[in-house]
Image (tube, rainbow, N blue to C red; front, side):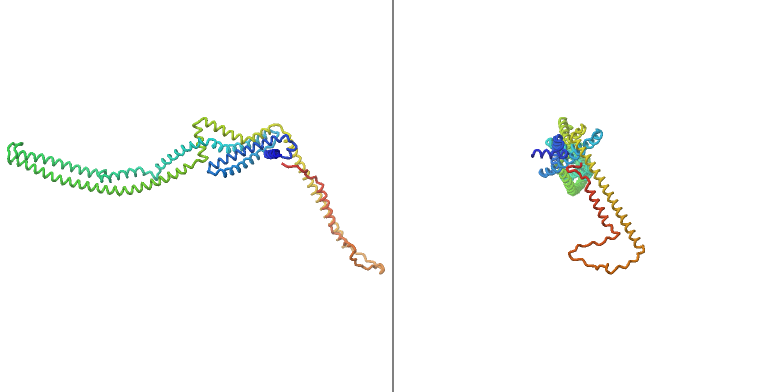
Length: 465
C-alpha cells in the first residue's frame, strides 16, 4: 500500500489525473517515471543552489541546504508546469510550437542548475588557479598605485630625500648647487699653491746667489743678490695675498656648505614626513585590496578560473563540457520525454482525457441552456402576472365609474344579526382585492423552482482540466 501511494504521488507529480488513471491503468508507469525524473531534477537543483550560495556568500551549510530545498521546489514546480501544459495534440506543428519555448526555458534552467555543480566538481583545480589570479591581481593593483596621480611624485620625493641625506651627511660638501663656490675655492687654492711654489723657487735663488752657488757665482750681497732678494720678497707678498684670498674662498665655501646642510636637514624632515604619509596611504589601499582580493573566490572568479584552466588544458575542457551537458540533459529530460510522447499516437489515457474534457464542455453547455430556459420561463410568468394585475386594476376602475343600481329594501326578517366568531372557530380569510396579484406571483416562483430542480446536474467524479 505504501508503495502504491508513493507511485500515485509520483504519477500526480508527473501531471496525471487520478480519475483517468483509474480508467487507464496502463498509463500509470509512464507518469510514475515522469514524476521520478522531476524529483531527480529537483534533487540536482537542491545541490546546485546549496553549492551556489555557499560559494557566493559563504553561507553555513545547513542554511545553504534550506535555500537549496526552496530552489528545488521552485524548479520542480516549473518543470511540472511545463509538462502539464503540453497536452497531446494530433498536429506535429502545434506540438513543435508548444515544445520550442518549453525546451528553451528548460535549457536555461539546465544551465543555471549545471553551473554550480560543475564548479564544485573541479573545485580543487579552481582553488589553485584562484591563488594565481589573486597574486596577479595584487601585482597589477600595486603597479596601478605607482602610476596613480596621488602617488606619481613618490620616485622624485625618494630621490630628493636621498640627496638631502647625502648633503647632510657630507656637511653640505656634496651639494651640487655649491659647485661655483667650490670652484672659486679650488682656484684660490691653486693660486696659493702656485704662489708658494714661486716664492720657494725665488727664495732658493736668492739664497744660492748669496752663497755664490748659482747665478753670478759671486758670494755676498751684491746687486744680483739684491735683485733675487727683491723677487723673493715680492713672491712672499704674493703668497700672503694668495693665502688671504684662499682663506676668504674657503670661508665662503664653508659658510655655503653649512647653509646647504641646514637647508637639506630642514627639507629632509618635511620630505620624510610627506613620504611617510604617502607610503602609509599606499600601504592602506594595498592592504584593503589584498583583503578584498583574498576573499574574492566567488562564483564569477571561479567561472573565470575554470575558463582559464579550460583554455590551457584540452582534457579539462572536454571533461567540463561533457559534465555540463550531462547536468543540462537531466534538467531538460522531463520536457523531452513529454515531447517525444506527444509526437507518438495518442494513448488510451490521452483519448480518455479528450473524452472527459469534451463531456465536461457538453455538460456545461446543457446547464447553460437550462439556465437560459428557466430565465425565459421566469420572465414570461412575470410578464403574464403583470398583465393580469393591470387588467384587474383596469376592471376595478371601470366598475367604480359605472353608476350603482338602487338597492331594494330588504325585509326585516331577512336581516341576520352579525354574530362574532367564537374563540375556537377557524378564521375566515378576508376577501382578496381585485388588484392583488400575490397568488400569481407565488405560482410563478414555484414553477421556476420546479424547473430549476429538473436541470441535469454534473455527474460526480468529473474533474475539469
